Image 1: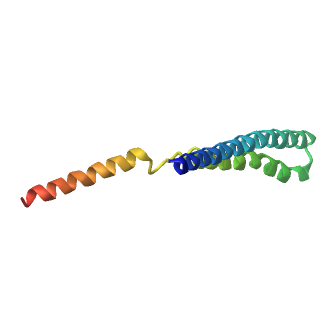
Image 2 (image 1 turned 90 degrees about the vertical axis):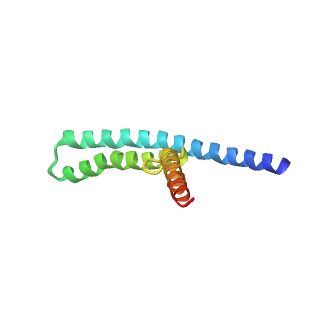
Length: 107
């Protein structure tokens, strides 16, 4: 019993650390995105002909951060889009119903 409790505490500690890392990454990406957008605005205001490419790069970075944050959110909080718990439960009940049909058909 003691061993199971220590495993649960270790798992809870690891989960808490993952959540803390996620929120740290969230804060860092928000600050970096504001910085990138601000730099893009400053470059765009100067309206130099060579400044178009850096503006695109600076504006695409927050989009990449958003995609990475969404993927990390799904991983850390164990969210599933396609094959979640509801899907698993429906498949299990469907398999059980099929087995009941085939076993009652031959009895």
